[in-house]
Image (cartoon, rainbow, N blue to C red):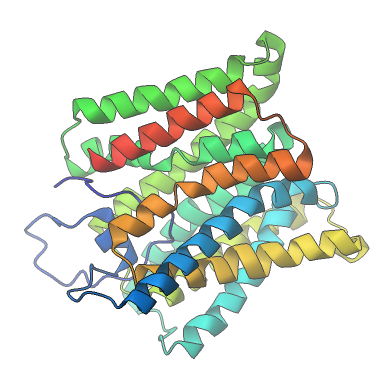
Length: 333
């Protein structure tokens, strides 16, 4: 069993695991987590065009949200920002799932698994990334966050028994090289200041990757959009509770720009982003869609430079190239 295809940054979606468990699941993580196998028909030109448009929209929404989140930190504390906006987007996604005809009912035996994946892939990611943005520029956070497939490839060895190939080891070394560049690009003092943020992103990425690998063994039996809505809502609710306990959000005091950015996160990044993502997966080969998501950190770096005036020099470009190259190698190994 190999991770031949790119790990997709999606919430783990429904796959029927009632098959014979005496045999290992030989599907790629795309098929196991997205529940959208490659179509056995050739999509029309118009269908492919719509798929590419949805894929580009997803990459733009997810990439632009990096500087959006960084700017929102000026008006909301990190856990509250990520938790409340994410929960609002998750609730909207329930409506999209219902309108698309998907059942929202969770089988009784799936609740524990659902909660586990929600904590690992949503609570950990949303909460820790929000905290990381306090310590790191949005551009560098997006680069580090793009390393999820590399950790998934590494975890597949002990968890799934997949062989740790030289290609995967090389991919990990490239990712570590990118981290070293980000840490040392501005001197020792700057590296020490960045260390908490870097560790937070790496832990968040590791948790997300672990949930992806576990979901390959035990996928959820839920439709795609319904699964995403449940996991985002549950995971962000936990983050929101943490924000209410340890922070003092002043949601009603947001500026006009603050409300606009908050709405973009909830409606754009979460609801529209995932709706377009699954729309693209239904119209394009999964391998094509997965390669398209590599645009997300690129857009994040460029958007952060344009919107926030963050540095876009050799350090950021070098780390981005190393990470994206490592991801491409890991997901094809």
